[in-house]
Amino acid sequence: MTLAAISVPGTAAVRTDRAVGLWLFAIAGLIGVMVVVGGLTRLTGSGLSITEWQPVTGVIPPLNLGGWQAEFAKYQGTPQYELLNRGMGLAAFKTIYWWEWTHRMLGRLLGAVFLVPFVVFLWERRISGPIALRLLVIFVLGATQGLLGWWMVQSGLEGARVAVSQYRLAAHLGLATVLFGYVFWTALEISGARVTSLNKTPRFRSWAIGLVALIFVQILLGAFMAGLDAGRAFATWPSYGGAFLPRGLYDLSPWWINHFENPALVHFQHRSAGYLVAILAVLLYLALRLAGADRPVRLAGTHVIVLVATQIALGVFTVISAVALPLAALHQVCALALFATALWWTYALIPQPWRGAAR
Image (cartoon, rainbow, N blue to C red; front, side, top):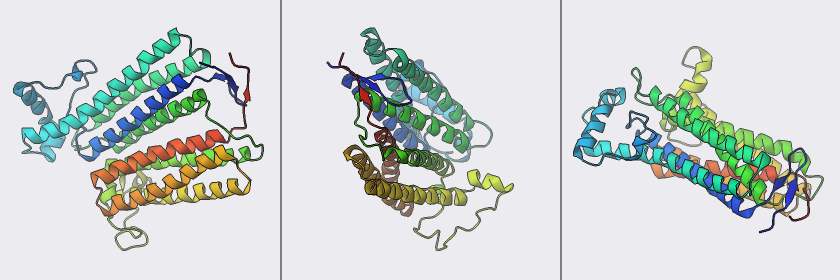
């Protein structure tokens, strides 16, 4: 195995190691799977089926009829059952239970898949110093994400709510996206992904960072869409139920609350942000082509453009299908893929680093 020091302007040197990089890409992929399963758990109304947070004993699902009846009895005491699912049978409960149980199990699996190789790589001194500290921060953020998930679930078990708070859902998805991006960026660094060798294209890096930020905001808006079930507010495109602008955008009081609690305005914001992402991505792509961007930048940019077009198409089909689950899942997968490729594009715009002697 050959290790090389990579020094990126403004950052500490990072030793490349393909095995560590592949492991981190796998971790990012698992985070992506967990986010998608979490989205489907919300869309199927399954997130409140397990009413307790049991990090250890919760690994084992009910194993017999008595166990299932006990879990069902706990769910029957929730506002969601009383107000929305009264009369649900045990078979239907099992369906929503398995969605939530799978989501939680993926979180536990993710922790193990991260922690065990991390300890091994640390023992073998393949990771050390700033990278080891960064990976430790990632582990702490992962644990925090579990706590945040339970805090989100609690919001749906209180009062007269039949779903989790859209604010807590956005916080949960936001941290998951930050964690995904942090792991993915670190994987790019450690794997030694290629960057530009030109001096004139890095000046566009601030625009690429802006694109990443805008995609992140769009993902958060997607969380509010899911939390309010706002995707079903309008089943037409490009109009909003036949209107150029949706009606009732500011029906709630005070006015600012409409941006977070009015399904019509949340839907409008999500679509509008999608158009802004597309415009910024195309402008940046054309500007870099005119500036003579080299292969690493062009390759990343092409992926971004293709995924932007795919994401818009998926968004349209999701809306006109009244949020069909397969399309909603693909829309969420594509959102994370777009976020990752935008990060890759930003990374590729780092000036060619100095590579030290192999050691």
